[in-house]
Length: 262
Image (cartoon, rainbow, N blue to C red; front, side, top):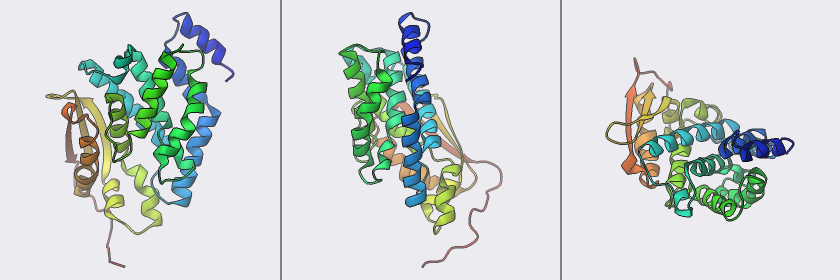
């Protein structure tokens, strides 16, 4: 990595944070960008499912870091603290887990979480080089790998950081993500309901630290929340910290003209 030395120097002299160094490395990694793009070729071109490439990853990173910030403001205990690490390290863990959680799609959609675990260690070695000494480097890697694995639907996260990745991944539900599978296949409640989601906002909550507000153009969007997101939130370990509201903006819009059973 060409700029690793200058980044490491800045981090060690206190001119920039560990998180900022690693964020720049994530944004500038040719290998990581290639894996994101290859994941999308497999997901969109070959399986005709939702986006799992660079746009999805950037959304998950943004949402995850916002969730982390709000939970930190509320004094929530992060898994990083169990190792004697601090909030900045929790940010690093969330950033890296979000960046790497779906790269296993280059192998296959099935068991992609496990495939991501196989690919992630080499990338983590590159992204963390020169920033952490042992045992902190291994501690950060361990937390990232747990968060990647725990974004599986049937796995209970053991840390707040892992729960954040599960929730952030599920919150990439705005209509743009559903356009391709909607166009190439028969409309389903999954694609129709996703097209009804106009905007997902992560706000500071009232009674709870986090308020997720979903703006919809059609009431079909309720399916995304009640049948999909609700289950993931319940299995994330974050339910006690999150409140969710949804509303239809303006006049309800038609998504499909007609539907017939095959």
